[in-house]
Length: 131
Image 1 (tube, rainbow, N blue to C red):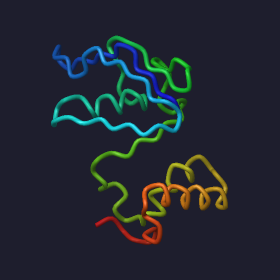
Image 2: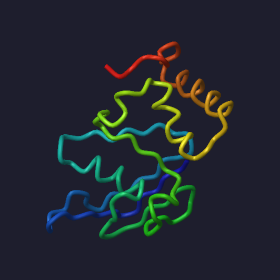
Image 3: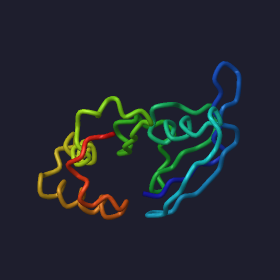
Image 4: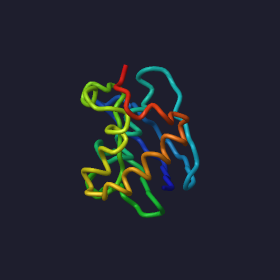
């Protein structure tokens, strides 16, 4: 999925938490947001997923402007920093959760799970629970 942010700005209580951010992330490219607590990393991720609106700017996924598109129509998954919601589920169940909600067939879920486990070097750990 390609992601484009064009001059994205978000304020909370009149204070800018994201200020004029622009970036292009190519399809299949790995990208990391680094910064101290309160620097707007989570706000940007929430805006991309459609969970938080922006005050200014544009968000595009695969070249399509989704700035004002509802979260459920964006096709973006977001796993929050706190794993408390899914601590009862194995690594495999966590990986497959969004696919199951979207009614992806079991064989395809398994294939994609294995692919992702290889990608992040966690093969063989799929039945573990979060520590």
